[in-house]
Length: 150
Image 1 (cartoon, one colour):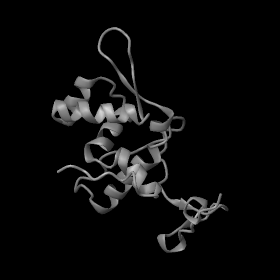
Image 2 (image 1 turned 180 degrees about the horizontal axis):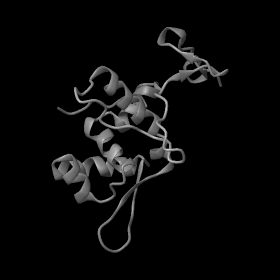
Image 3 (image 1 turned 90 degrees about the vertical axis):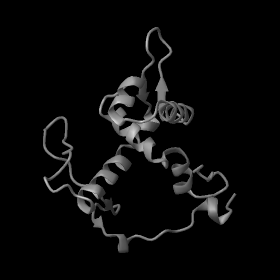
Image 4 (image 1 turned 135 degrees about the vertical axis):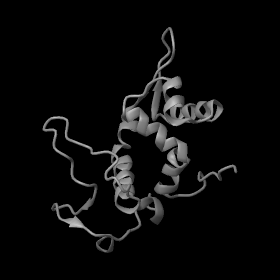
């Protein structure tokens, strides 16, 4: 089934989904965070059809999430700053899966601070003063792009 474009929607979430909303895409990004760089390694790790992988990698490069090397030999794909900025999204989705779709044997991954080796805190939403907020503590407020401010 072909995905509908969200380009016409004036919504940051819709615009984000236009780049990372297809289910293989976040798995490709996950593997890139885990150090996978080459096409054949992505394909082997994911078991994804080559044509689908090629299409997703091309779209991620076009969106500026991955950079493709142009040197000799097999090209490599590396996360750009824009791609690295997706880490909190990936961690939040993983933490959600750990909580709401757990494996009977326990955690699939533990994310740790490279410096201390200690597990990181679960992703959350925090007030400007550092308090952890619940979903009921947060509301959306229209910004200038929705209010029509110029």
